[in-house]
Image (cartoon, rainbow, N blue to C red; front, side):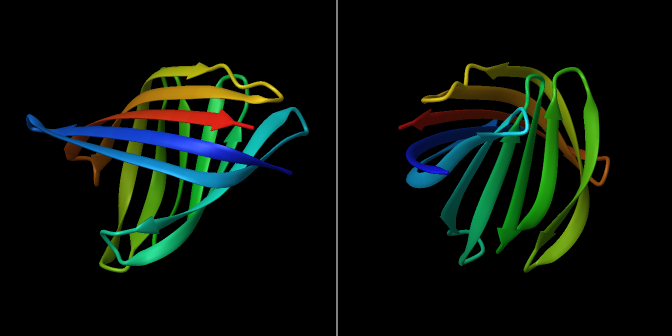
Length: 137
């Protein structure tokens, strides 16, 4: 694992209300078994806790696992919908993740991942999301 800088921009839209978050942090990055692996820690202001995020990036699939203040595993695969369990200190629920677009330009020295997806909660409320992840050595 090598130390890297990670920049994450997340945008959400719910019924016309837009929100944008940005995070720049240090992380660890490596290539193993045909996949890029990224790990970083972040403070979750909405739940007042920290979590560790692990991201596995394959050619056409991104798997994001979070442990700590939020516990979940989300799978992003263009044109597909995956179900997941989302656990917070305030309760748990089922989410569906439908990926509209996934772009991956990661290489040995870093790169970018862009994901556009729709998140539905318990098969009802839908949230449009955009995630832009940049990894630099």
